[in-house]
Length: 181
Image (cartoon, rainbow, N blue to C red; front, side, top):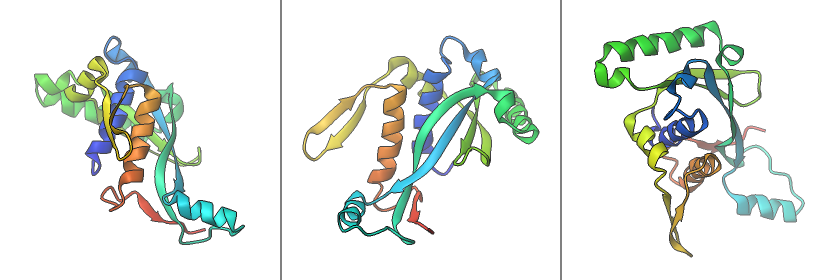
């Protein structure tokens, strides 16, 4: 995954939402549907346009954001090809040694419009399981408030994910772009 740092948030979300610490078998028949959207990268420019009664047209800066994540039955949200890739991932992990064989594998289905989607399996590594178990607060650096600790909850995980993209002014994650319409 190109954005391992961001995917860590989704892995921890999976640990909490699917209760993988006490019921890892949940990953066998449940997937996470990640609804993505775009939002303004530059809220001040959007506010100026709104105050000037201008429309933001093509070329406005936008970024990818998670709108929501939902638990859904695996069979209702995945294609046969997605389920085959999940089976291959499980086989590969089982054959890679005892340590990796114990990792839960969760199917993620990303969608933006509810019709088209991209699904792939993701192994939940021990670090994500540890973060889900310990719920060590996220530390956010703020120019105004210094370092703030944020509790680990499903809602805060999505906010942290989205905030990391928003703060990526250099576009290292390649999740900022210009709108086409």
